[in-house]
Image (cartoon, rainbow, N blue to C red):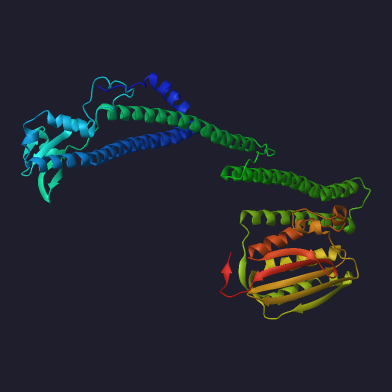
Length: 488
């Protein structure tokens, strides 16, 4: 017979919910801080109480020994006068009288007439006193305490004639000392309770303060998850939480900028695609309506618009593959100067039409590990940018040098230049200093972004600055080839 599974206890969910209410950072911080300080207070109280107890007992023992010196002297004088202990052994009353006289113990009754002072309290050493002879035999005192007694020699004429013994205080004392000790213990207990109350209050305040700051971070993270990138947190102080709030604000700012860039990117792509499509549509409608004849000139115009669309889509595809890390490179040792010269040779008709004078200062033998087609594309895109924006007659100066294991290509063209504020954005996708001029020259605003992606994929760097020729200076830095061919 199978046994049915046990049904969950109805109290278990309620218990779990009750425990979950306490499973909060504020409660954990409070328990951690309060628990740690509670242990410290208890340990401090125990150490202080033990130290005070031991100190009090030690002080009283030292006080006892100091007060025994006059009594030892009186006993020595009595023995010297009678040469034995019979004078005190036979007269039992003489021992308490001697203690009362020398130590001031055992007094009772009203004070003498005319003396308004109250008698001092009895000294608790009296029940612990013993008198031994020279052979360590107990003369006066309880024999059962002889083994616990500390012996002080009684010396007469350089000879030990007996010993005064006393039992030290090794445990909590009684009488007035015990009362005083009890009072101090109560005071220590009150102080400990006050410290515990302060600890609990302090733990509650600290846990509330920390949990409130962390709660703000949590609320901000939730807002970011909802897409509210305008959320900012107050940065209070200079501690780790303040730095975390500052980092959160930088993250929110970066996400907000990324969203704006994405929206602008989509809008720019739509605009770039719409322009050649609108031209194609107008050309086709004109041919359909018979306004324009379907001849080689019309087909050439359509082919030009299709080519522009193809270039734009291909550039977008190349950048997307680069972002995904899926753009492949067949790298091999190449002579950088030869790649530059081949690119200029291929564009010689366009250079001549633009009346562009090219000055070359290329160090021969500078080899880099690169993909030939991609590196040629870098040269072609930079040359196209120069041809598109330099005013004829234009000038281009190229300088290639190798230094410290790096190959540096300096690309300077003539005016017009670019404002310094726009230089860092030249490699942004679809960015143009003057959008209308760029569209008039057929540019998509992606060529320089492609150049940057290719250069960085080769382990290099691309930077823009003002050129001494009046236009732009591009500086490309690539690592010099030192090894074998590779694929990437």
